[in-house]
Length: 216
Ligand code: ADP
Ligand code: 2DT
Ligand code: MG
Image (cartoon, rainbow, N blue to C red; front, side):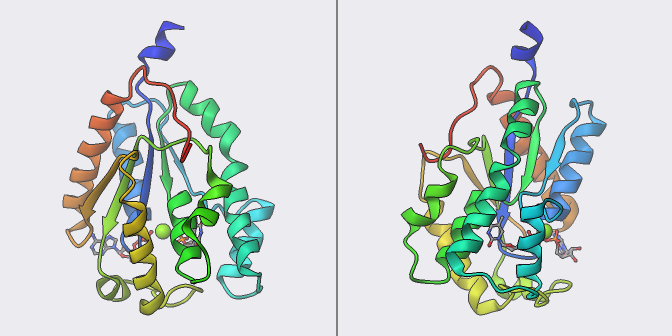
């Protein structure tokens, strides 16, 4: 239908090290888009801890459960795939989706463990809906560690986060993806304004464009 083609929809991913402000900005962005009349913008946490797979992931992150490194990697990917039918449906209806972390976190965290090649890490997520915009919230691991609640979960050490950051830099070299780096040391409000304007620009640009497939 004509309205479907006219509808501005975008898939926007927020990435960055722990405590960079992804969840804060994801909530703010969706609220702002909604207030401006964008149809039902949707916020999704692909480390969604509510599904059965998500509960396994959650117990791993809080150190209740140990899982072998390949296994947890595949579970994170499965947790994204289980949302794909819903994501496609919403995007086709013209609904913008903001994802708080995506396949890039999957690859960055697992490859930071060492003994994993980037290519192996990417394979399970090949073909996922391709984000129209990936916002990278850039913050030094030292600055991140000074923010609230750091250090409670698995992966939350400055040395590991430093490796994660290096993996993200490798992924950002892929120019087939629309990465935009933003300075996450700014105030919540300033960062929000910047992110909102980048999101709106993208929503305009992707009108009428088909949804792409990630890493394909
Ligand atoms: P993430 O989802 O990236 O881990 P959060 O959005 O949960 O990060 O934010 C982590 C902590 O840092 C929270 O306590 C939040 O209030 C705070 N915070 C978020 N953005 C900023 C900012 N721009 N400046 C200072 N503190 C921030
Ligand atoms: P948050 O609740 O702060 O987002 O923490 N992770 C996440 C992975 O290792 N692989 C993934 O695919 C994803 C999405 C990052 C979730 C933690 O899980 C890590 C931090
Ligand atoms: Mg978060």
